[in-house]
Image (spheres, rainbow, N blue to C red):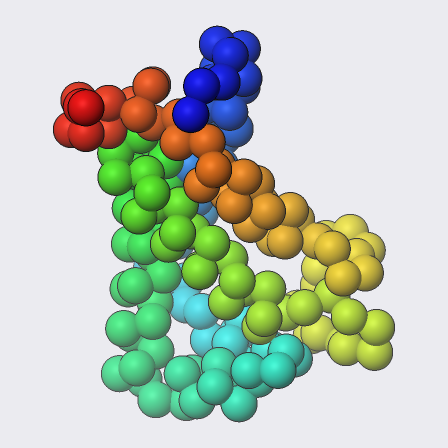
Length: 154
């Protein structure tokens, strides 16, 4: 795909910013010995509410979910920032954000015990970040600016 240099630069900036957000969220959870996803999972109001609650119900399953969440965020973040296997990182980010959205959709009539920042109706920051990742799927900037350029040479 042939896109101009300015578009590549700004799409790369978008990729790095989203990567930073994922990486930072993962690192914050990693260094906090008291962090757990249990509150988030139990507060679920989406269509998969029973699935998310079942993840929180078993301590062994919860430990696996917490581990995958932390290290998934870190790996996705690093992949996006470095442009390393960015297609896998982008898809993984879309799936993870999709799960977050399905757990806590901003729909009328749903009340959450955990406070939300801002007021949303259908479209929230999670959905916007997920849409930005979908855009990045169509513009693989890591093959021009990133480690993928070295790995996937034509």
